Amino acid sequence: MAVVSQTEIVFLGRSNVGKSTILRQLIGKKVRVGRKPGVTLKPNQFRFDDLLITDMPGFGFMSGVKKQKCEQIKDFIVRYLEENADRILMAVQVIDAGSFIDVVDRWSMRGETPIDVELFHFLHDLDLAVVLAVNKIDRLGDVDSELDEIVQRLGMSPPWRQWRDRIALICAKKGEIDELRGLIKHRLHDIKRDDLLKYFS
Image (cartoon, rainbow, N blue to C red; front, side):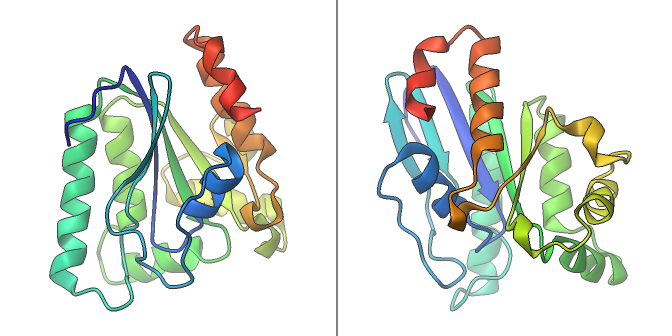
C-alpha cells in the first residue's frame, strides 16, 4: 500500500472487538461500524497532517468469510506491519475484556498459539510501542483478578497495574476511552509531536 506518511498509529484486533467504534470516539470521523464480525475487510485510513491512523481488518472468525480469505487477511496484516514498521509510532491492540480469556484458553487447549497472543508478541518483535486497549471493561466482574489473568496469557507478569503505561481500560460504546486517549497523547508528547495532540482532544 503506497501511502506516504512520516508517522502512523495502527489499530489491530480480533473481529468485532470494537476497533471501529473506538476510532469513531477517538477521532470523530465517520468510521464504518458493523454488527457482524468481519465487516472491515481492508484497512480504513485517516490522515491528520503527516499522521496516518489505520484501522486494520479484524482477524479470526468472520461471518460469511471463507477460511482462506481469513488467512489472507492475517498474512496481509503481518506483511503491512513488517513493511511499515519504521513509520509506526504506536500499535494499539484491542481486545474484548469479556471473551479474551475464554478465546485464548480454547486455542491453548488445542495446542495452538492464539492469534491474539501471536500478534502481541509479533508487534514487540518489530520493536513497536504497543498499547493494549482492553475494551468492554464493563463485562468484567472482579476487574483486578481478571486483568491479572489477561496479562499472564500475554506473557506479562501480574499484577496488571504495573503495566498502566501500556494498558488502557476502555468501554467504547459508552464513550469511555480517556485512558487510551491519554496514552496516545503521552506517546506523541514523548516523540516531540505536540502539534498532533489537537486531534485527540
